[in-house]
Length: 109
Image (cartoon, rainbow, N blue to C red; front, side, top):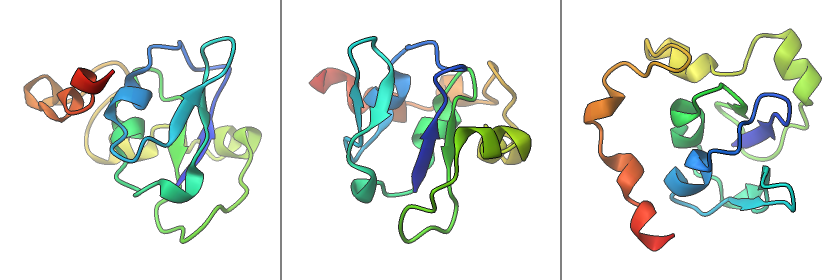
């Protein structure tokens, strides 16, 4: 389940908003994605995987919110951990240029 959007790391590219199949995010007045419908999160990790700055943390086996803070995620080096586990590195997704799933929601925007 999506737990944290880092305001310090986020560059407001809206990729997470566009790739989320459950429409979990909204943007605040400053354009920062915020978690608006956390209970709708399908834990698909698309937002975390496609984030170019590792600004998101999705809790792997959470049935509900776990209440982890941004500072805890930072201290435990959890930002981007799923993408790293797949072999993707920050700003350079391994093979993602061939993956078309990010286009699923773009047409609806």
